[in-house]
Amino acid sequence: MTTARRILLTALLLLVLLYAAWFIGRAEWFAFVIFAAPAIAFASGLLQRRPRAGFWAGVVALAWFSHGVMVAWTRPPERLFALAEAMLSVVIVLAASLPGLRARFSRRP
Image 1: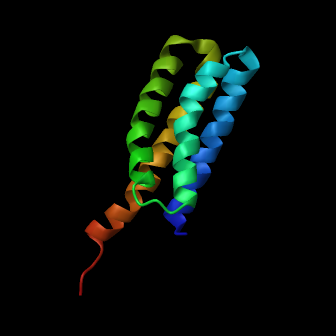
Image 2 (image 1 turned 45 degrees about the vertical axis):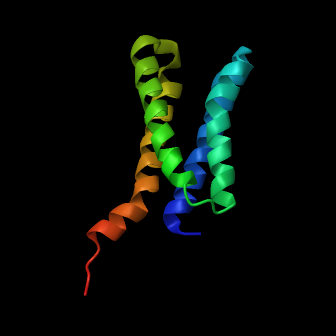
């Protein structure tokens, strides 16, 4: 597994843990399922070496980022969770994009 995929897998798993800490303690298990299920599915896809799992993780991370920014601005008690969600989403987008960026900007002999 490449470094970018390891970073992506780690960020996805950290995001699942973040959602568990954020939602399960408040009896909002349905929110945990809605937000964490895609991250679990993408992490599973990465472990199974599915070629499009990283791409779709990056696409869905844009929605996670938007959610994090929205919550950070509108709900001050949840701001730390929301900012952590936004940060992990940026890491996911960058890690998912890294192989393509390397291929695009690498030197060709």
